[in-house]
Length: 283
Image 1 (cartoon, rainbow, N blue to C red):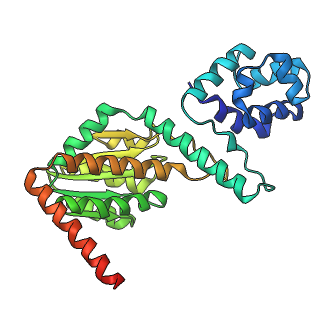
Image 2 (cartoon, rainbow, N blue to C red; image 1 turned 180 degrees about the vertical axis):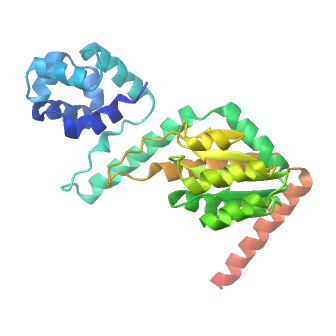
Image 3 (cartoon, rainbow, N blue to C red; image 1 turned 45 degrees about the vertical axis):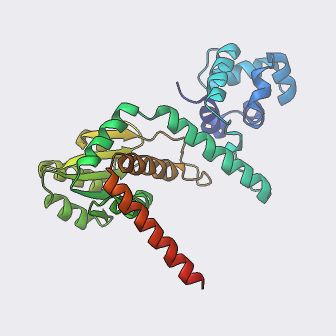
């Protein structure tokens, strides 16, 4: 079931002017609407009761009660995305609240939709990897670079390829025992898809981090779906990158926890040396 708050937000620009008044009330204070009658909602939006019903149908519900059921489901997922309409009149304090609320809501949505079984399979593959190559373009390339910084701490050679030619070159040279983590929220970035396909042909395992059942998933041994509430609005924060970064942290920590005592000792020693370097730099 789609988050009805996101449905309302995405549909708002195409609604009739009077229906938009209802949409704005819903987005501003969804908890209040959850406990309101049709008459009370109409009064809050300063429209007629038939307009409220028409609004519910316009956003894909059979009526007001169906709308409230879906609203309750959305609110149960976490903090409501009440900031969804960012206005050019918003003061900095309002922008802070709206963006943080939206980020928290979207991450909570991703957390509830993450497949734990698939996550377990990905961790098992990474635990046995002799080499890991992270691949992504654009914002996903930033996630790849972040992952490449974390995983070498576990004694595994890692790379982060963002250039399309280099992605294919590296993928073609991989061998069994190597792993590619292909990152693409839309899952339709051609260089990443081609690199994933090439890596599998080379005998490597492929883990995909993507936003849904995308073309990339068809070229992966395991797909981790990071479902966020992103949309095409230029003012919407890019939560997909934050969600993917969180999944990378989950994978890294889970792999670290499976290492033996000797690794744990080396890891503590490495952290101690880094802290000593920071202390000397401060002096």
